[in-house]
Image (cartoon, rainbow, N blue to C red; front, side, top):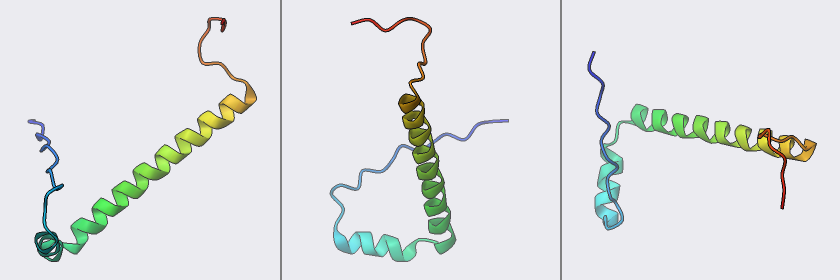
Length: 70
């Protein structure tokens, strides 16, 4: 099977308000919900990862097998 090529992100730094509003109106609501859900899922995963690492550091866990020296 062929893999889908990922499109590079669009540069929207110089887009006008009227064009942004027109694009928003033309957007499929289900597509917007899917994108929002995936962003929320990624955010929750990142927060969980950070929390696990903070807990690990607080317990004094070390990830490497070598001794820490200054």
